[in-house]
Image (tube, rainbow, N blue to C red; front, side, top):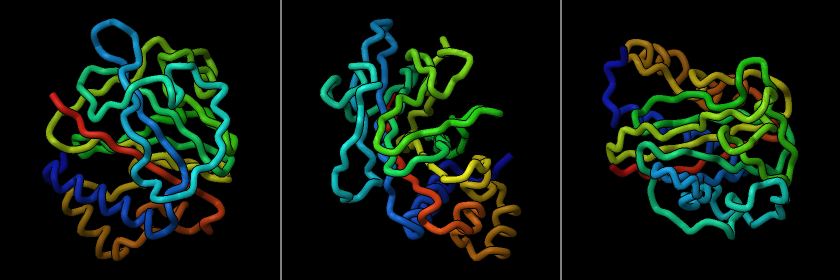
Length: 225
């Protein structure tokens, strides 16, 4: 079990995001939506518009495949997420390839959302995708839409919920453990000693590739009680 505090874990996550930014500017746009937990099944709001995207010029995006509630003009803006709400992610990328979606949670832990084992999540450039279960999504769930959506579990501890996307031009596996250092202090000390915390050590696949072979982006939103 990790001996690092939640704050220390989030400091590591922020450092990873900074290192990825140093490798290349974020290009993938992610938007987070939630459904209220009161049974209304209505999308509560557009939570965030990829603060990691910088000042990149707007690009044309085909959003015709999105359900109306998940298009920009549909929901109202919201400033936070609450535990128990459904979480939905809309992704669009300027580069076609294989989508890898990760959750960098308020707990400081990192987990992989997509693709599922044995599944390829292919995305086309310039098209918006609803990359979440429980909303009639079939693109990334070949056996049909799942009944159970992703749910925000918190904790509501003052830290942000983050979703990070990577698109690679080649079909390569990316695990959550390769996108951040091991949280155990001994393992982390060895990691620093061996690598100097270089971008290539955060993600050996990405760090070894030219920028033209991968792209990334993230979004974040505070979680409140």
